[in-house]
Amino acid sequence: MVRVRYAPSPTGSPHVGNIRTALFNYLMAQHSGGKFVVRIEDTDRAREVPGALEDILESLRWLGIEWDEGPEIGGPFAPYFQSQRLNLYQSFAQELIDSGNAYKCFCTPEILDGMRDYQRINKLPTGYDRRCRKLSKEEVTAKEADEMPPVVRLAMPLEGKTLFEDAVRGKVEYENALIDDQVLLKSDGWPTYHLANVVDDHLQEITHVIRGEEWISSTPKHIHLYNSFGWELPVFAHAPVIKGPDGTKLSKRHGDTRCLDYREKGFLGAAVANFIALIGWSPKNDQEIMSIQDLADAFAISGIQPSPGVFDIQKLHWMNGVHIRSLSPSQLYESVKAFESRTTDEEYLANPARAKLNMALEAGDPDYVRGSLVLEQERVKLLTDFADATEFFFDDNPPIDPDAAAKWRPQRHVEQLLHLVHRDLDGHSSLTVEECEKLVDDAVAELHLEKRSDAIHPLRLALTGRTKGPGLFELMALLGPERMRRRIESAERYFG
Image 1 (cartoon, one colour):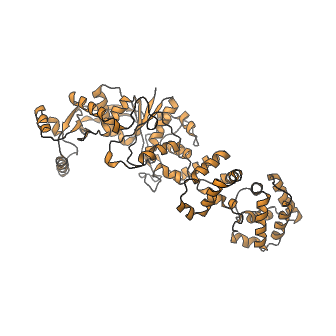
Image 2: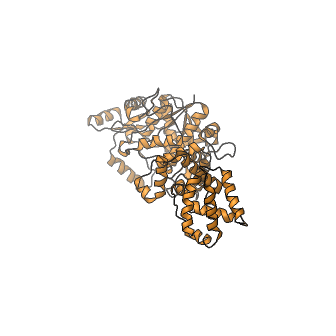
Image 3: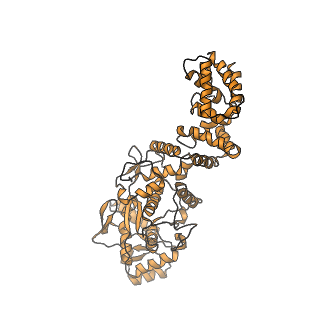
């Protein structure tokens, strides 16, 4: 069975590149009927950020990623927090020392700083010079007796090459002599990433390691650890970096921000997952708009490209609009309601339209609110757009655009038009779209107007205060006779 993992460190909220790794692993598990494991690598206690773990899990859920084993769920290979597995790493580190594949290093930070300064001044390759690797057993015993807490370093082979087959890049090889003797266990007994991730991947039976290409140079160290323990290697696949449209390293100006920031900006989790999955990976066809299930059905490691992926924020906006338009009325209503429920008081003050929409969602007629969202569904790209787009629905006296009013006020038929429509609304408690269209056409005929648009535009202005919006007849049917009467009465006073 395929078993993959996402192993973030709670040192911050996940960004695009990091969360793409989670998505690739999840899609791999879903496609193959395997298991997706979330493991928290919380061994860097000094850099741990409060709330980061919650952000990590919330980001996954927002994108539609559910884990089979991990935090809040548990599983057969628990615990899934590395801070709760320290005894394992310490025992495996000792096993490496006993087999000669690791050694204790007593170099102080001052010694290491001096070593680096010497290498830099003499233009030598930087890295640990392996001086403690040469210590005899007696010297090690003596240093331990002096209560000098050591670190444990990996004893990399000094000759030959390490070769491995990367599922994305093919054959990769490194000269062993050029690879540093990595610290595996710190002097306080806590492991580094290199030891902990290899031990956990083996014990949790991870079959495929899909991660960012920044870990390629560490893979020979990990392979040596696997070989030292006599463990079977997983399949390694290193996804490409993500760059901005200008070819430079992805930065905040390109959109490299915390994943949950996109939720606050009005993006749908499904759209962001769709977008991120296609950065550096592509299905066999040219399909671009895909649900999480579509992505899982099509996913294969062979589709991951070795060349850098491009983060195009304009494409994300377009894709989000398409996903919004694909929502059913009930899905749209719930998505907007969930988004607006996170509105802060400061955001209300900055945009009163959001306050109106939120109030309507909380206490208004659900059918009316849902209908207003549906009528604007084709015109928005972000959930944030709905507040301004629908504001006139929740204001019985929407302010009229003065520039548009200046165009229509001099035209004598406008006042007559409003009077006729107002008159014909009498006796109706509701109207269908077809009845609304007939009502307007009757007014056009009675006023002998040459163009239907001479009625549509001023009537839209009277009902919404705007010159653009959804189809007039659909709009009228949703507003209903009572709301239309109040708005037309107000407009008659304005144009009178």
